[in-house]
Length: 243
Image: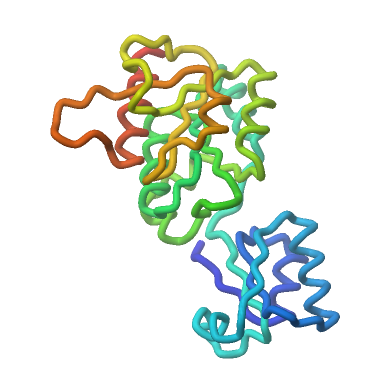
């Protein structure tokens, strides 16, 4: 499936009614047309990121020049529910192994992490709705086909999701250069691997919700790894310990 830019009021309304997974919606600021108000209500009902902007910005984003003050961006793939990820682990008779991504903004990084999650035997990936890239066509391409097999769930609040998963027996370890060396940690059992933003790492509230922090030994002259590389290194320590 390709990334889908949907322009025009009727087209956007039809996208909502057909159940297309819309990531973001841009509306002309100040527009009070009844059809636009309906679109805004639908966006809020589905908890879609809604941005009001000026006509110049909409004109720049438009591919057709006929946006009518409304442009939506649909995901390239359907999102799963968090419960689907747990069900996949249950069906395989395995302890859940999930990736939780805190604000990954680079689509190539997200695609590479989804690919790693698949190869490491993870049961899915959880991403936040806000301040993070969604399942764009670039992400799908970078995943090298892994999106066809590894479900991705999008949640409104990562910390709240972690709290609910803890009630189901999961515990969480985040990548943090100040954490304990990953080789010294027990990474077995139902685990969620938390990877942070490319620049700032794992945010404070998400880090506080984690049970452990894991660092990757560094021998070079710089002190950080690309987010997708860090995800791969930690994921394969989980794989090694799980046997």
